[in-house]
Image (cartoon, rainbow, N blue to C red; front, side, top):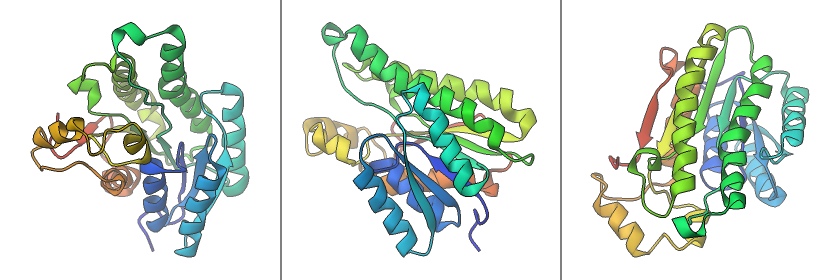
Length: 249
């Protein structure tokens, strides 16, 4: 019996990277998992296959949570399959670096519509399907909310908003026995970080130099912390913003 046996977990943006690792770890701990994806059905199906081959339960559901009209479908499919939601992991996000002179209204809204509004509206739609005994919401933020590196003004701002929303919702949803926490990764080796040239670059070298534990993170580092917040081990923990970053802050 896993620590999440009998629980249902919905993970947004779970077709690859951190989201996929979270989905797999939640399933390994006994949860029935909904692997959400926006465009990569093949990636989501591969995550589901990995979970089911290991003896877990999972389904893939396509929905772009930047589109409010698709959020209802995601929640409906989750409840249709599993009857409830005990754990919501708001992981879906966009990361597109841009210096000040390159910022446009489109760049701004692309980030805020997914990283902030999508998180809020997904949470809004999910909360009525939590059981009376409550549950856990984990928002995937980033150390950039406080590190504030250059050329990331818009992305940094979205993660600062995520942390503020986490604190607010922990108070608002506490009476419903729903805990709300943020996990803030440092640099993590993901497909996105590789494709944007961060891994193996001077940027990575500088990040490692500024990280007390002396390495960049792996997706399973983030997954382990997220699963902690999802389980009853964190039953007395809410409104916390935990940096999972090897000490980088």
